[in-house]
Image 1 (cartoon, helix red, strand yellow):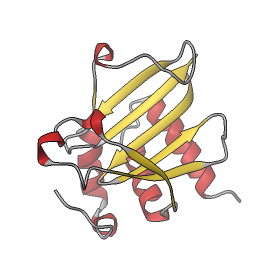
Image 2 (cartoon, rainbow, N blue to C red):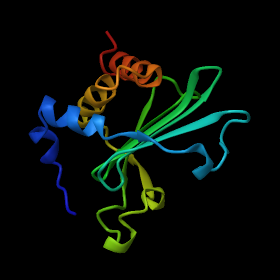
Image 3 (cartoon, rainbow, N blue to C red):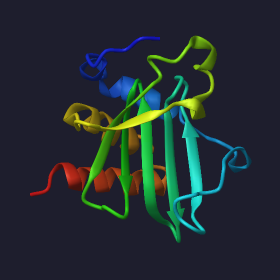
Image 4 (spheres, helix red, strand yellow):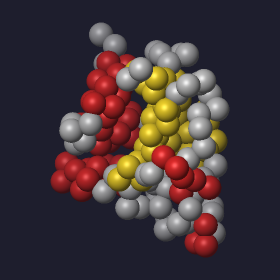
Length: 149
């Protein structure tokens, strides 16, 4: 599978809704305990595409850490630095096909420039899962951070 960044501008609301609706919660028994925050709960959603993952770490219903990966791009947020969004890229485009089915095997390189178009897609994906308070909470935070005035 190969993506260039032009896929972002080609996603309309219908395609974004379709992607959002493919996200399924992964059984927590398949995850390691949080190593970042003692006593935190990790909630992982996986979409129909390889390396399409959404992960929340929460404690007392508050998001401490969030990460989304989709089509070679990544965004993460951390409560330690609440006014920052970390952009990154995954190695999925370089991974052999034999690894493409193992989403947790992606390696993320941080420090990419924040792509506002990608952030807008992420916000729209989160909003399409309005039935889940975690998704709503993160959509609101990203909207606030992307429109600081």
